[in-house]
Length: 240
Image (cartoon, rainbow, N blue to C red; front, side):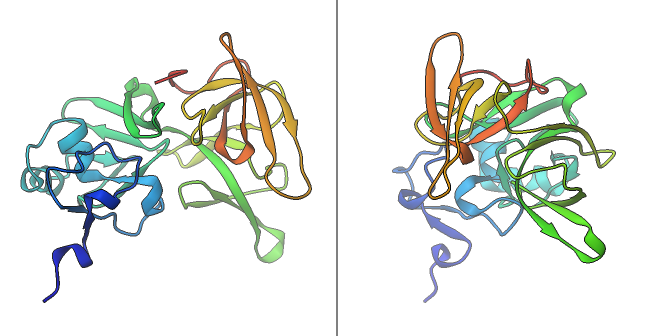
């Protein structure tokens, strides 16, 4: 007999650490569908409505809300309760005029940070790769799985400020000393600071040293998203 946990669900005890859920009161929970973020780096939309916002008490209630098209992720209506929501995504509830940015807290868990409605279409993307297409066209591979066209002025680890509504780049921030970085993973997750040193290694992982008013700390370069030059381009807390 096929168990429900073998396909659409997984054991709560094996759920990614970024999920803020109770792990011992029930055996099974939902599993992310394939989407913009990998399963280990995203939270199912069900948890956003039920466990984070409290708009639903049960999975059934959450599905009713979603089927009515009342929840948007990055400006698009999403109706599948297993849709993966990840770092820097924008969750909007138009009926209540609420907008949230998905960020990691100090434990590395995903949480919702309320932002003004003026920012509901603004999203920071980290460039994780570049692909050369036909006729020399450069494609930028972004951290949430989407791809957009760019050029060779954009480099891996740079970030872009993107307008989800107009589908255009509003700003470009190179990964370099003096810029403001936000840590999305590792021991210093959710911390923000000015980059004061970049250790570029030919082999292995490069490290970055950041500094804020309280401390100086070091983390892997791949764990840092650049969010501004003097100040952040988006509403974001320094430590959650």
